[in-house]
Image (tube, rainbow, N blue to C red; front, side, top):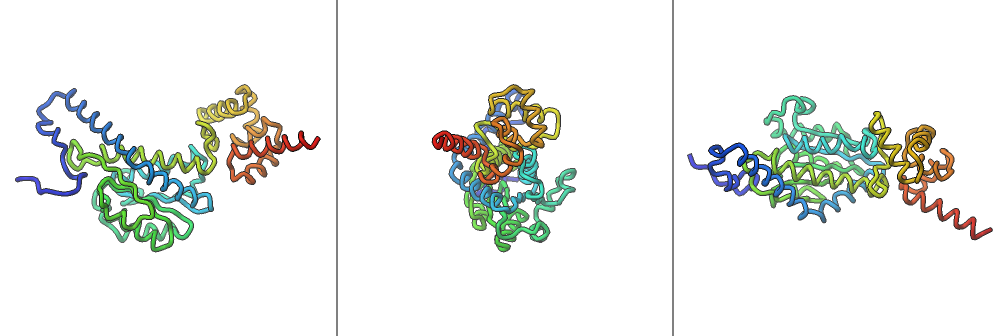
Length: 310
């Protein structure tokens, strides 16, 4: 039976896949790899909306609100992967993050398709998360029409939350319910409809970019360092010490000691290397919006003022 035509690119088959199952394993893998690279490349077309999304999300977090992610299937997994990394990488408290996925926790061991059609559950999940004014919901869907993702956007917007939508099809219905719409126009999949491949690759990259820019806006990045990381294992404690050493221009042993004295805070340890007491460092960072560069600039400005005054 002939395939029913569809206008959704995410459901179409890449013409290069004709006869795919007759080719050598290496040829199949080469085609799959090429398709992944092409999918990744489309993210460059979405830099402006990704930047707008990051600014909107950072404003909510910076204002004391929460950042929620919602999705179904592989798109939901991409959303959750981004959400789960924020506390460890950038020190954003887990209490400020909400994760909504069709099927709930069961989806992490059984990614069934049925729950993605449950719009009512999405509405209940948004209500249970307590989303409202000052919060932000990021919904992700390859098709842009998944009932769970679509309903989560509608419910969050109705509750007064800011809304962001990521989808891979132009004209996605989700975009009509989003303050910021991010289109990732990936080509048809080599395996038609298998959006865990190209579409999900583009989503993962775009979400990584958005959340990294959020961290930059919040002052949690200094040069190329994650200065608000939560160092809760040996590897990360070593990384934190190296970050302090690099920024402060001291050796790692001294940096490790300063981290211990600063309660594990990279930002406070860097300030401690400049002779700032722990309590004073906390006040300085609070006054600088937790932005280490601004705190250091303020410290330098104070030092120049004292020198000039003398």
